[in-house]
Amino acid sequence: MKKNVIRILGTRGVPANHGGFETFAEYLALYLVAKGWDVTVYCQEDEGSAIYEDDWRGVRRVHIPVQRPGAAGTIIFDWKSTLHAAKESGLILTLGYNTAVFCGYFRLKGITNLINMDGIEWRRQKWGMLAKLWFYLNEWAGAWLGNHLIADHPHIKTHLSTRVAPNKITTIAYGADPVRSANVEALRPYGLTPNGYAVLIARAEPENSILDVVKAWSRRPRGVKLVILGKYDPRHPYQSLVRAAAGDEVQFVGAIYDKEVVNALRFYARLYVHGHQVGGTNPSLVESLAAGNAVLAHDNQFNRWVAGDQARYFRGADDCAAVLDRLLPDEAALSAMRQASLARHAEAFTWEQILGAYEALLLPYAQ
Image 1 (cartoon, rainbow, N blue to C red):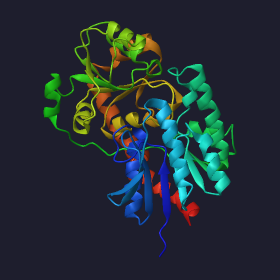
Image 2: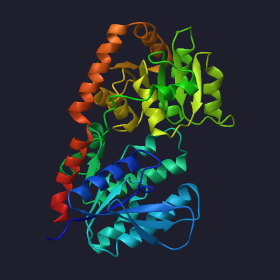
Image 3: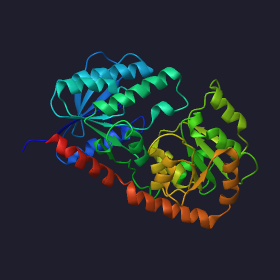
Image 4: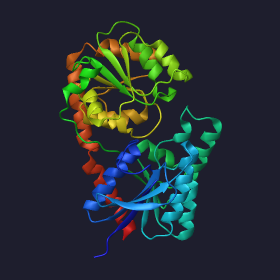
C-alpha cells in the first residue's frame, strides 16, 4: 500500500529546541509516522556547507546549513528548503507565513501546500516599519498562494477571512500534554515553595504587558513572589524599564529551557500571569491550562477564547493591581480557576484532539 507523503517546512527542525512551532512539528511528525505516513522535516543548521539527510525516530530529516545568523539566515534557509522540497513529490505543510512569497514556487510546480498562518505578526510592537511591511505582504501572499490555510484560533480565521473565502480556512488550535505531577525539588534552586509564587513566561517585549504586570505587582507587599522567566538585557530599553519597576517580590530567574524545571514552576504556581496582547492560540497559555494553573490574562479576544470564562482578565497596570488585590488571598476562587483550566484543556487542547484534526485535514490532500 502506498504511503501518504508529507514534508514539513518553516521550523528550525526536530527535535524541538526553540519554540511552539518546533514543538508542534515534533508532535505532528511522530504522530503521522505512527499512522503510517512518510514524513520529512526540514532542519536549519548553523555549521557545515552541504545538505545532508538522516533519520530521527522514523522521521526523515533534511539538514540545510546556513551561515548567516538571525532573520537573514532564516530567509535563506526557507528559500533553500523550498527549492529542495519542490524537487520531490508529496504534500507540503508550511508552518508560518514569514516567507510565504516563496510558496509561489510550489504553485508554479503544481505542488499542494497547506499553510498554518500563525498569528498576526505585523501587528507586534517589537517590529520596525520595514519588518511590519514584510510580514504584512507575506500574510497576503500566504493567504493567496496556499491551497488551504490553517488558523490556530477562531479570531485568526475571522481575520484571514478578510483576505480569502472562509471555506479556504480550517481552525485547529494548539495542544499540550497534561501536567499532573512535577518534581518539587526543581523549585529549590530558586528559593520557591509550592503555592508561594506566581509565574510569568514570555518574551520581554512591550506587547506582552510585562511592565504593566510588574508595576501592578510591586505597588504593595503581596506575600507572594512573581517569578519571571526570560532573558533580560540591561542594554534593552524596555527590559531595563521592567527591571527598574520591579519591587522586592519580583524575581527574575532568566531563560530556562529545561522542561522538567519549567513544568515544576508551572505546576506549583499559585497563579499564572499571561500578558500577551497579540496572537492566536498561545502555546504558553495552553500549557498553563494543561498544568492546572489559575490564569490571570490580558483582556483580549485571543486570550478569552483560550482560557475561558473562569479565568481572570486585566487591562493595564491599574486594572491588574485591582485584580491581584482581590484574587491572591482568595483560595476558593483560585481553586475553582484551577479546575476550570483543567476542564478547558481537556475540552479543546489535548494533543490527541489537535493531531487527529490535522490528519483529518491533510488526508484528502495527500491521496
